[in-house]
Length: 504
Image 1 (cartoon, rainbow, N blue to C red):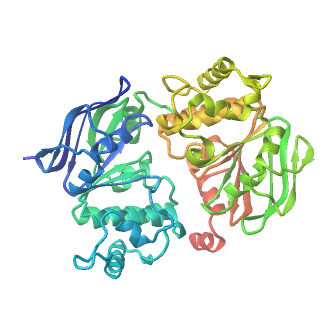
Image 2 (image 1 turned 90 degrees about the vertical axis):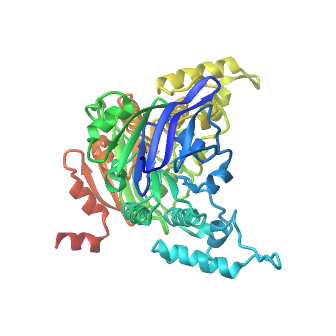
Image 3 (image 1 turned 30 degrees about the vertical axis):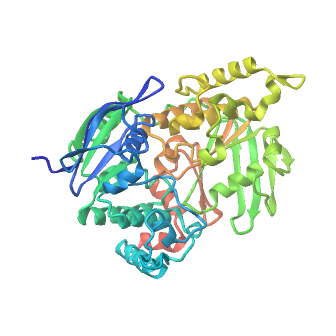
């Protein structure tokens, strides 16, 4: 007899003749954490949306607790005890914690029809205490961190009596400590009897919380293994269909003349007295703890923020950056951390996203030439290997890795000399990461200077020629590729008092 709470058999979903799921099978046991892994575009998101009733399958069956069911909509999923917590938290920022938790199941007095706020606040507080959180239920969601918002989403799932909880890339935007807190909550949920589908690209997540792992590749089911039955190398082969013998491409670029020099750059409240240099053909990494000021430094160099003092020299000339348009004209491009909000117009086509900043290149006397625009978009999309049926496909239809490539293609259309990349591989799978690394190395070999922000230590050590560690808004240490070690970089990134404790 199967002890499964959920069984999927032969699940198929087709969009415009393309199979997003191709006869996929899956099962979830009572009280287990089952990791679901695969490259971007493998079918994981479609799989979630079928289980939660957002999409209707074109084939296959769903069996809950031994009984075949049909999940017609998200309300049905909630009724069946299924809840999903997404990477990008879908909250109401201007409402309170309590209102977000009970949004679609408010408690109302049967006699007066009034909402029972006092009772709901008390219940919300109890739910949060159960999750070892002291967040005030009357706090606005907009005042909470991403990690805290995810705790509210988990509390909401528990409030609906969900016994199957889907976590979609829950640690992607979290620090190491915040991830550890989430792991503890996940363990707590499992111990209380919940069954969890944990979707992630991170091997740390797999090792820390999972009991089993299922791999999807190219919309198909590849296999299921116990956590101790498969190595990381075997996982990578299962996910990408080939062996990746090295995580980073061999370096082909050679550093040339200096292109950027920053002296004493300061933005009060964010960073102070920052001095860095970047050469043509060189990849310089800015690393440090989340909140150290790395992104703000990049945004200032691109003109999104204005510095209070400091000097910036570009190609040996002192410059004053007042806005992003000025930066682009100088030859500075920026790939933001949040590609979906800041980097792309998700409903627009790949073509329009690539060409939108340089439409004058494809116009004649004010009239746009769609043939020229399409031709150039196809050329650039091919150059960075965007995987899509055509450049007319909307950006929202692409996997995270391919969305990142579209932004790179857009940058290549501009006449750039320096590219700032903020967390260039955040939230994308191992195969897509390697593709982005190859693009970065190729750009450096062509003479671009690259300034990269990254929180991933292996990425920093594997890709950077020099590593600038930011601690509390200041440059703590600068390492050459040869001299950098994980221990040295971590020690330079940690607050001084913490680093001292680690040395005792």
